[in-house]
Image (cartoon, rainbow, N blue to C red; front, side, top):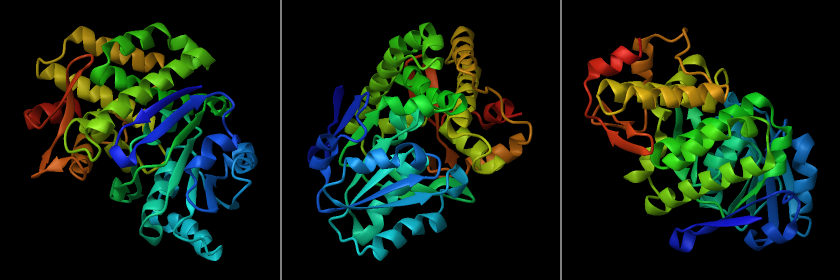
Length: 355
């Protein structure tokens, strides 16, 4: 078992990583503030892990809500099901919400916790690789709007993050690869040694080798925890974590939520950011080739889906949280492990890589 800490002063919290952690009350009960617990999960995860998760909270008054599985259900309408159960059970402002599932469940549960009675505690128990290495850490919560992804939400930190790597045994290969896109991101933005390690251990990761996955999860969480501690509300360096995301969110929105997995869209976005960086003479052709090769090796896409035109992509990218003064701010690269946030690029170069 490995423990990391997200250092945020009075809002600091641990990330606990290990095998067989689900269902162990000593790991979660210290972070339950009151006597009531609502576990939020979905109809894919519930049959696999809900019963075991509830065992960890058996000393408390517990209830569960099972939401439909999928990005297309990450909406204000569906989040009302969480509020319904909280009110039906008369849960008070000391209630602890528990997110048991992937990134959609984590984001929605965190947002519900931020809103219910103006804020109640919550715990993250991520069960997908993407959630374990990215969305469960850092306090970004929210839901999608039909015009833009994650446009409604709040920064709201959990009490703890519990990562049981054994839950990855039931993760399908497509979801595993989607999570690896976020893992690759950390290597590209500020950890060149990790990127090289990923190139050398691709087959082990795809085969769900326990040692390789545990190392990749811990290294990713260490990278994210350090960045979040330095910039909790994304006013500076934390925006680097959005490498590929402005492109990726446009793809997700344009195709319809759920058609392209978040990690798949981010993988395409990373390739586009690399190509634009090369057009600016910031990134070498060799570096672009290495990035694209690793993404392909992880069974991820590298090209914009043919259903989306360049004009559609630009229109969707303009509806993004990182747009300032009408300018699309992007995370671009000056090398593997060297990312920067900029709007200093020729619009024609951006249009060129989108067509």
